[in-house]
Length: 257
Image (cartoon, rainbow, N blue to C red; front, side):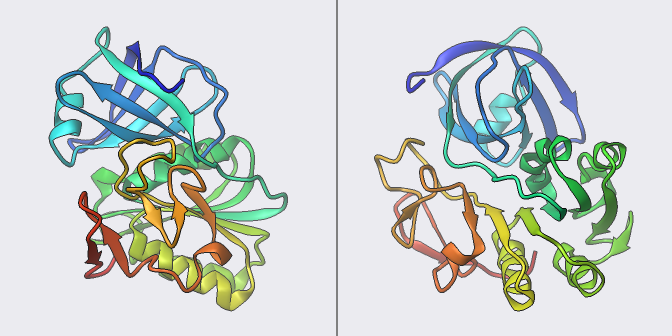
């Protein structure tokens, strides 16, 4: 489906002033970690990772700019353009796993709760922005919470919680999605412990189907070879060091998670 099809919005769940989940009137054969392109006529088209792939698909969105501000104006009964699914999703690994989500990066990990078992680290800047922690608990995951301000769980960062878990547990795989600086720390931790990891990346994207090259990272197209990469594929690349803007210019990451 490479042309947008207008589909209805069935439901909008408001998690906070910044986060909403939109359930769409469309079913596709998608894997956790894959994404779709959403189009608002007269506004723009943007990639969105699936937060539900069983039955009617859903996307969980953070309000960050013009496109998402217009999306937040839409509600049940409105329509958006949809095309997808695209990209490479997560691969299931049996055994004891750990999911590490930062902010809205928890959303692409959400469908894994029905396929895997183990631990989940759910983190956000503050308690109001925590996503899906209860759902992971209900699915049998052992959940640890981290908030930047200490308003819920531990006042810490997700990579620090992962470091403590790696001291106590042996994981068959670590799955992560969130700020790139956070994921780089997760990747380095896993490499030091010899634990495989799969990381879901977000990069500036235009076409979503591997043609324009705007999402290129070390010769790999995030929309095609990704958005999910193995840690070994990202070693010694610009991952976690630079992002790229709409012109393709490098922008160095600053600050923490």
